[in-house]
Image (cartoon, rainbow, N blue to C red; front, side, top):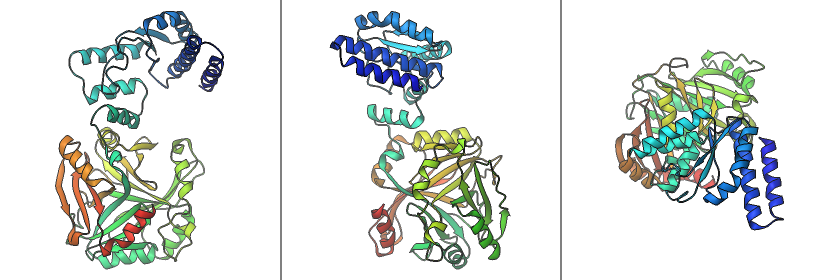
Length: 439
């Protein structure tokens, strides 16, 4: 791959010394070499040249065949490129495209083209074409948003993520998170108190007598608190007599280490550290920037707090969950553990769908939790969801108690309640709004 890119850059440079026609030809050859190598390396099932007029293709055809043969792939001369929602309909009108491919991929392309010709040409066909071109879901989303009114939550701006936990004894819950874990309570409505873990990832403790869920509903969630000080936290929590579900047993070659504690009413808290490992290659560059970010009070030094969270959610159908998070919410997958994934929501807040057959919890119909997304353009997202129905709305837009916030609630494929909200100007929200403004 590196060789192909070097060749491409060199050819671009050499092209600057010739006539315009020669320049274009040299550029096309460089692109073809790079694309053929991507197909050979299975980076892309298909690779398309720039649209060219038939005379240009005539001049390059023999060279294109040689390039394909040298790399063990094939090239097809397409004079009627498939039209989907991925690209403008006139992108190759009156032009030809060279398609570098392996035989099975070309057959898949022709099958899809026949489907489109038969009149079936919506989002599914655009995504199928995008996958044939090797595009990840978030890039397919971006391309479709340019051509259609398709949008995901990402397009409306995510300011942070928050998870609601429900308690019989609110005083005890607040004491645990504020005094034992040393986290700041940044708003307290009486029936609910929001605890800051990081600037854009929070926990909200809710009185189960007044909240959406009850304390006896299955607590089908685990909250990972990311820290580089596992041994210190483990020793401290043992000293404080906090129940430990899974002990701290670090291993040298693990992708992550950690232990699991139990909060006052049974929610699982996973104190976790992701490590340099092939599994974490996309995640690790994101984490060091926030290593010193903490929601902790003066009880802990800034570096001993938490620099991120993962809200682990448990699903019966992982494929359906991934599809929803990627194609409807627009989130980007950054860790693939096989039976568990991690998606980035905010700078330091992540969601982790887990196969309920293998995780710490099984899949359950009811959940003793809700997940909240702080949305910059809440009204725009609400109007889009009403019109396009990417998921069912359980509760229409409403204003929270005392005009503190606006929100609406939907449900995801795993039957988790997803609340989308925006905080309003209110004395109880001063700290929250200050944090959001700083971010």
